[in-house]
Amino acid sequence: MDPDPTAPRGRRVAITGMGVVSALGLDAGSHMAALRAGTCGIGPLDIQDLDRLTVRIGAQVRGFDAEARYARSELSLYDRTTQLALAAAQEAMDQAAPPPDPERDLRAAVVIGEALPGMGSIDDSYRAVFQEGKNRVHPFLVPRLMASAPASFISMRHGLKGPGWSVSTACSSANHAMGQAFQMVRSGVSDFAVTGGVEAPLTFGVMKAWEGLRVMTRDVCRPFSRGRAGMALAEGAAIYVLEPLDAARARGATVLAEIVGAGMSMDAGDIVQPSADGAARAMRAALADAGLAPGDVGYVNAHGTGTAANDRTEVEALRAVFGDHAERLRISSTKSMHGHALGGAGALELAAVIMALRDGVIAPTINYAEPDPECDLDVTPNLAAQAEIRAAISNSFAFGGLNAVIAARRAD
Amino acid sequence: MTDAATDAATNDDIARKVIAIIAEQAMIDPAEVRPEATPEQLGVDSLGLVEAVFAIEEAFDIAVPFNANDPGDSEFDITDVAHIVAAVQALVAEQKG
Image (cartoon, rainbow over all chains, first blue to last red; front, side, top):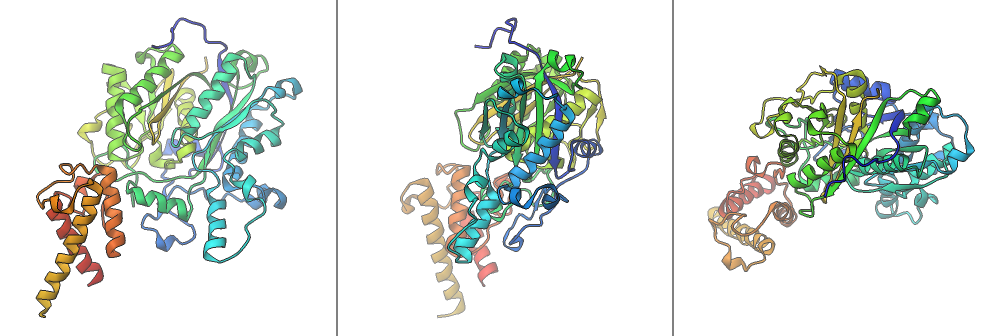
């Protein structure tokens, strides 16, 4: 049964800081400018043993100078996931600029989504012991590859001492993480939360695993378009600061947008095939949680992986949830630009939601070639659009049927 | 033996191995795998097909151009067992010949 839409849920929740590191740019401003311009961040990979891969493209973060950002003693503890997450968290904290408050920090939360922890560190270590015949690996391999390492290092760097954990639900990890952080701020468990997602899967071993599934494009990612040939893997991190709206306003913080709902569901179906019913139930749950009617929603950041099955199923689910209003929705898959960052995906995509709500700019679905009758909704093909958007949702539907949808509203 | 006879023997061997792989995925006896049977009729779903293609690649040391994103539109013809066998025979000739 849906929650009672008239029941008070708790406090309103503001986003007061954002930080992004992606193939589109090393900060949130660059990421959003590239989204607006329809820039493709997917291209030839630069990784070890590339010649043994059949899929040689991905959305790789370029120009991220870890040595310049972190001390040598830190780098020996930081997997690339932690490096990217800390950079995004720093940008988000700098923007939110919370005044010192030791009491608040005692209950401040960190919840970070990540599907495949420490893959670069694991790859390097397996290479050393199996291929090079070495008998020891780096002494800090364990803290490097813990799924919770990014959450821990964010808490340490910023002195956040309340509830903290990592969330791993494959491609929905970031949305599940942000949904939980949102619920904690709304309910009063925390007055401050740092949340988002990260992934750094562009390693030989992970690419081999994804090759095996045979759902990867070898050239471009064209979600919802006829002729789409699959998804492209990505790395990146996006981190947000959440606070009670009233407190954020009282201290004069800039409110980027308001998170108003989180909806979750499980398909209880297939381990890889998507389900329109499961997707639709997650979207309905997010709308109900937010107290939004389908007609209130102006923009949907789609899961839109670019596989035949996902995109067809997602359109079916959107029609089921929104009915006739589906024809009027602005929809896009920004994975066509920043790639599919798995556990970080929903966080990279929340930036597009903020851009739609705050700036009235709908990021496009690029590489769109021709309409697919099974995906016949307005997916903002190739060029960004201007539209006044008051409310939006962002979809994540994971392998294993774990779905999470975030609902957001324009700051008023 | 003539070259043609050698090829025939090799192709028979390929057919036997491919049918054995399909039978294992379908969890039936190889003798029950009819040439005109489709993967669907044999109860082999998309995951089963991906596993069968993997087993074929390992058995013959070849690369099979099969895209699970849109299996019907793949270069590798999976219409039925006979087409799969013929496609593997062609790939072996092309890549191992």
